[in-house]
Length: 337
Image (cartoon, rainbow, N blue to C red; front, side, top):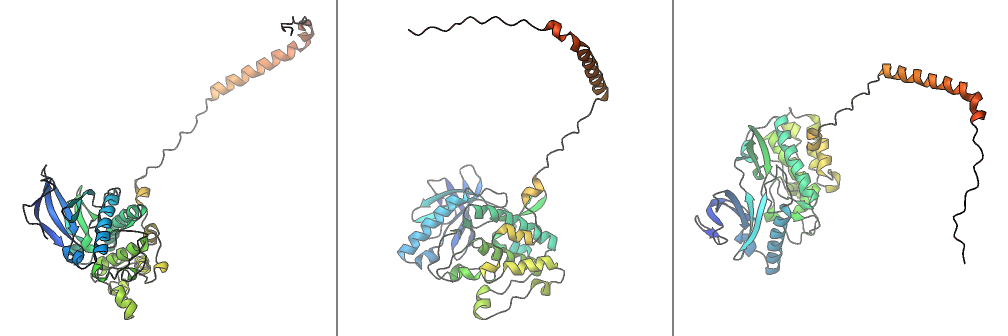
């Protein structure tokens, strides 16, 4: 059941303004809260839910809300923030900040320069490092799920739509071809009983960089596996791409997950992209060099020499001042009776 404009959720806490988008997995709505702030609410798509068994549906809804709760801990400027989760009737809902801007899918209709593309990919890669540290994966990284917003006069990338986020240790038990994104989904997410991990998001982000630099969507992993279709190296399409970036994209899109970089940090290093921390950390100022007061040193040395002369002259007097033997001390011991 889709909500209509003006519908009120959670006893009037949120009011539907309009539907923003509808995908194979979920529906997103633009809403306003009681303060007039714009937010986004995402709920699961009824068409998908109706295609599942009761047990699969219940598990999916549980995971949807659970991952939403976990995503509230993924605080990063390049990640859309999840602010609330709730159930409205039979519908599970995530409440997220509203990010105004254009998607990278719109921006990438024309090729980006390598420096601009790498800047956006680094921002999303650093965001995914935070996601992965929280034992989550995104599973749907693609240009359509990356919004460019302007902050302080500069465009920056924000990763949205975490509706497909799953635990690292979750094993897919059904065929998920309806949940895949052609050209961006790694092969392990097409198959049954296949674990997903950080390397799954690496494949998708590498495919995203491929599109930004070539203007073309890469051949799907499924066709590469089943039809032996060739992945055209991005440098063959755009000869302005550096060898380093070309190699990193091909490494990130290896069909065998074990041949890809195993962490997002490792893949970003292949691209020559240093971590955000290295850009923001300020080195500790050097300690000032100790200044030597040579006048004071000379005075102290002169004093020490004078004292040494004085003691050497007193050496012969010492017997005169030899103290008398001390009398035996009076015993203060209490006798034991």
